[in-house]
Image (cartoon, rainbow, N blue to C red; front, side):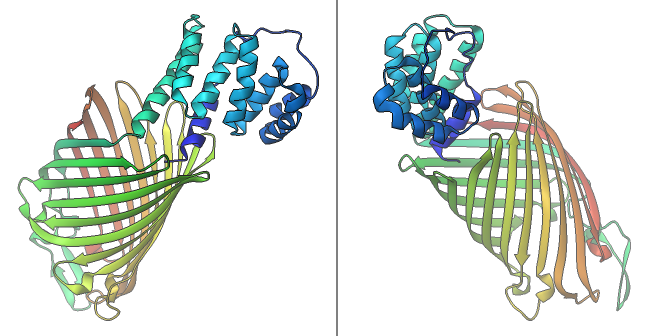
Length: 441
């Protein structure tokens, strides 16, 4: 989440109401320093235009053109109270000009006085403005509804059931034999790739508790299970619990989090993880968002301390929503040494990679695409194969969501992954396709 006022300011700027067809032109208003304020505003120097207007306000307040342009500069520079006072003066003199009321409504909106903003927007709607103006006002009203909802406690949940087919449920190689310093061995049973049909279910719940205007607490719980119909040994399930404390600042949003996760393999506890994280979100420019995060996680395996690791993961994501699509790019780097420096050191690793995401919002169909690549280098010689393991993984996911009713959707998804390793037993590829339904409430 970004700073609320800054987010609304950027949203409002994007929804600026077209005043060219509304504001009466050539009203005969003129004088200085108004022209200088207008020039600075046109150059994007909003703070300078505001400072000039504030210095001249004592002598020029009451002049409609000065008040209007000073009010616009105050809005764009974030001085919403000053903008309201200036625009109220000019609206009092010219209540018939809709553009003036629209800018006053926008100033109230950005100042989070939604009652006053609604009143001014309604006065404009009562005058039957052009359709494009009505549409933009509707967007402002929707933003206010969402903002007011965000200030209240929110509890939500969801359930999902899918079914599909996986060509490699155990992520194993298709090779029939492997060669080690001790000789060549045939791979049988679980050592080779196995295909199977599966069902997948997931349930989850979230709770948002606003503490004040800038701070919130979020709690989230998710449980899921992939049940292979013929191969129970690779049934995989997990239970995750998250808590996040969020604070909004002028420069952006800072998040502190804690997480625990338990993974089960064939109904038995396989792995436990405990982690802390910190992140920051901020607006880079109009339509560009940046998210930075770092997380430390203790990963503990139920059957053997030599597999235990401690992970430090850092990532950076750039999000770019446009009118037609939402693009995202994530770069990440991780260090994951083993808990013990002696035996099992070869299980420690370093990896880095990226994910690219594309979503296309729509009322009937919502397609999406995710592409990723990861390079992994292990810390020590693998004792069985007498080499240091080195992997490259590629992933691709494509799917579509189809809204069915409020809270309900159908989804269809295909996934491809490929791991190329210098140790043949770790080389594998897999395809899966699944479809199902999700209900959120």
